[in-house]
Image (cartoon, rainbow, N blue to C red; front, side, top):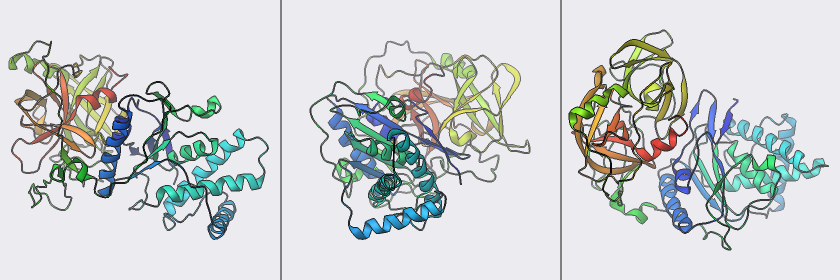
Length: 492
């Protein structure tokens, strides 16, 4: 199996964004992130501690592996050295195609990917260190094997190409360690190097393996030592966490107050889809928690519109029909115009099954066909498609006046193929699902609404309709404007 690892396809502008972003996997392409954050600021320690809680919680739910590394282990006893030496010899004998280590040793898929990643790291090391001898290269590879075992030892599940691994390292100064962290991205890890005291001194071509994020001036301190939280939910309150069950289609509440929520499936592709079900959220096992500190309200400078005026904005919302490889319609969803040059934002789960799509626009008799998925993010459940037409995009809310519960909203989409239906409601809560911040709102939606716009009363997009709570009455969810704005940057 050959996987193409694509680095840093989305801008990462903060520690929080790194913690929340999850690279997607589609048709052999895996998106990963390798970030070098330099300097420090007043919120860095707090941001790191919040990230520890967030990712620890996700790890407790067996969704990912998270590790924050202060120092990589340098010790290795003779028995271990002999084990790695034998594995190295087998790797060489296999023409560097497969490498076994303690962790995931029975996972042939991992061994193949790891073997290729080691070869790439070895070639980079050859370029860095002129005059490498076979023994020097062997010792370098053995060191990478030992460190990989150290990183993966807490991984509770079997690795696959969609596995989420989050690694944070503090003040890396050695080239070998930098190459190790780069190698981890070639087995699907997202890596953040936090260089508070100084940046690593390496050649420019090697620095270009990672993307630099400047946090502030360099500071004379390192990060506090990482302490794994065995029950991370306790830090945010036991009663805040909600469970999402995959075994039942019913929204029920258990003795701890947990709720089962329908949200789109993000991994894999179904072989077929029923037209009536296309765009309907699918259950996955993901944690949901109530945000305790939603944005504080402020006075908006945008003029409020009437419902009649907001309904006119439906001309910037489209209906998307999804077709299979035989040209048969599989179902429909909605989309939001975001760029004049034909760019349309929708949900990833709307388009992921399709071979091509048709787009209908209000007051335009032409049906536009496209097979272009320009960009997608499987965790945020966002995707951008493009059609050959100039568009009238909707403005994305900039957060100048915070959102509050009880605030009026309008949703526009095409539920059950009913083109550009308009409904109104209120924001009923703020939720975090699988590390993604969402609005809970009451404006009615149905299958086919996915990808539609949730607007404030000024006509700005504050969310994209994504999911609903099973058997709930107008309990719907939308990805927030902040993640939308970051995702569509460069397309507006």
